[in-house]
Image 1 (tube, rainbow, N blue to C red):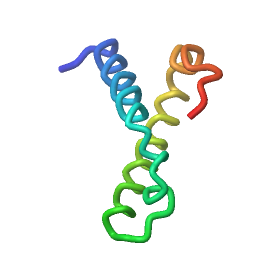
Image 2 (cartoon, rainbow, N blue to C red):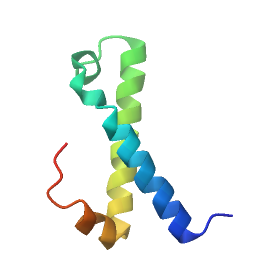
Image 3 (cartoon, rainbow, N blue to C red):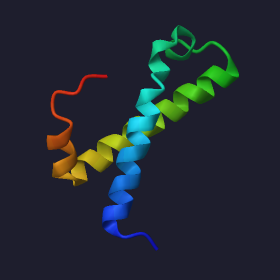
Length: 70
């Protein structure tokens, strides 16, 4: 079982790597007409919700990422 510190590191690493892919730079994903593009958009939305919930429960995460724009 992971410790709380390890879990925090994993979540922060995931967010960094995921947003580093810049999925919303692709116009096809921003405005998805196909089934696969809609699935990618749903995944992006799920990550946003997870990140929002995570950041609300971890004040250090909010402070560390203040002013960071997507």
